[in-house]
Image 1 (spheres, one colour):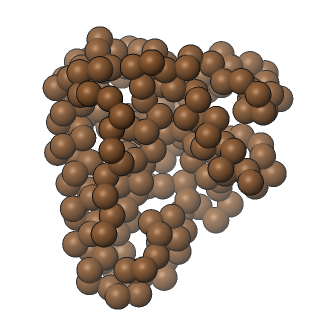
Image 2: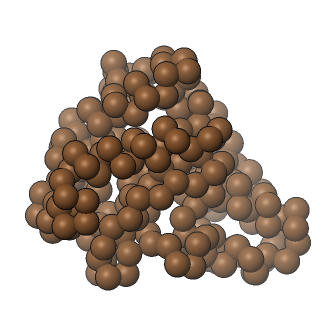
Length: 206
């Protein structure tokens, strides 16, 4: 039984950068819906019931039934992507990485600002709904990618492990920012907690 990540902050805690109504709707409606639908889909296939969501998505092609595979892909991706997204936000965010992650960002992107620009560019350029991710590869290197809909980078056998994810579905920003996705993408850095991303990087590169 998969469960939503528990928030370590109140729905209004990310104001004014992410508004309370968006947080309530995003977490209690959209994320809850993906979680409920994922669990319902998993119940239909006993071979999936003892696996982690990461393993399921890495091997999504092994789900033989087309309809079930689509349900697991969409809702499993939505579940995992949102768990990552909500876990790296904080009203007391560490605004810049340190240590090994900071060194790797400088090596792969030149600077933190360059990485932010690349993430914002891919997030802004994602047509329709989707995500922008920072991935950690098996050799410790970093890569920025974007995916459509709720697709997880884990479904790409040549991809890495997502350690930072930015939701660019309209439900993540439209109540406050309307059609100004770029304004949301600038504001999110005020509540994106690099200490959490550092933790994710360490786990991904053990």
